[in-house]
Every structure is written in structure tokens, then in C-alpha cells.
Length: 210
Ligand code: URA
Image 1: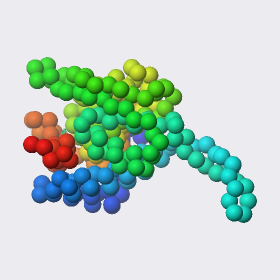
Image 2: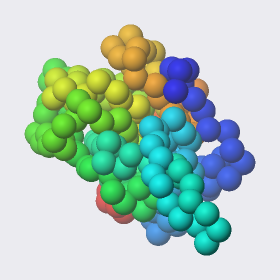
Image 3: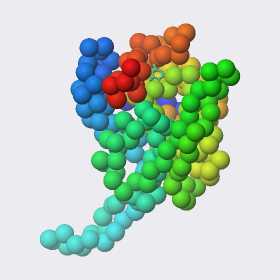
């Protein structure tokens, strides 16, 4: 993956995203579509994963057949909304190791504060896919990636559902080596830091909170 930003413009992704954006869409439908869309995004984000070959026998002959180096992949979810993307991707790649980063925003300093951090062993050897549906200001995503790099990760891809130009710019400045894959580059941010047109609060919509 060489481009810093990849927008997955596949019609199925865009169709599902439109329904997710609609304010009348129920929690159950939102969750189901997020699961489906995460499978399609996972297809794109794993496009350059390393493969090795193994000897197999088909009913006709032997062959060197490609297989995924599954042990070399780690998924890291930024809590809590990242878990919605994580579940779908794990269905496609059940052998992936999984980590979690928990951050909240300090109301006074507005800076992200860590409350949980656990990533798989040998993180320096793995392709790490960091998942968070909403790349808004980019502050918490950039901070999460700082933490994951401090743990040793060298090969990171960031996967989100929606990105704001401000978040993409922040990530490009802080982590130019981390490609971003998203279903949409939206217009901007509201004063409260919501992506616009966006879909609202992803965590609230997927968990039915608020
Ligand atoms: N987080 C969300 O859940 N929604 C936004 O629009 C921005 C950040």
C-alpha cells in the first residue's frame, strides 16, 4: 500500500454507508451494515498482506499454493467504536491477533489520555491494522498510533469508515508512514468535532447508547 489515503468507492460499500448515515436507521440495521461493510473494507486493507506458499495435493497433482501468513497479522481496535469494525474483520481473518487501545479526551486539556493498552506479542514483526470508524480531528488516532509504535510496531495501516480532511492532514503530519483506508472522505468537522455530513456518534449508533 503506497498511497497515504485510499477511499474504497465500491458501490456495495457506498450503498451500505448511505443507509448507515441516515438518522432513522435503527441500531440493529446499523450494526448489521457495519459488520457487512467491515468485510468489504477488510478485503481492501489486506490487499498487500504477505503470502507464502505451501505444498498441497489437489486430486490431480501437487502444487505450491499461496496461503496467508496469518500469524503475522495484528488487529488493534481503538475502544469503543473500533470494536464494530473489528468483529467483521475477525470473521474474515479468524487467526489474527488482537489488541486494544482505550483513550478518552481530557475535558480541560482536550488531549487524549490513555486508560487501556494491550497489544499482541511480537508486534514489531506484524502488519498491524488499527481500526476506528471515525477519523475526525485525528488527535486520538495519532496518539493511539504513537502508543502502538512505542510498543514496537513498524508496519501499520489505519482503517476507518469515515475520514474528515482535518484528520487525514493530522495523520499525514504525525504518521506519514501509515496509510489510511476509508469508505469516505467527508467534508469537514462541526465545532463539536463531529464529522459532517457524517453519521453522528458511531459508538452511540452501534451500541444504542444516548
Ligand atoms: N466520533 C464519532 O463517533 N463521530 C464523529 O462524527 C466524530 C468522532
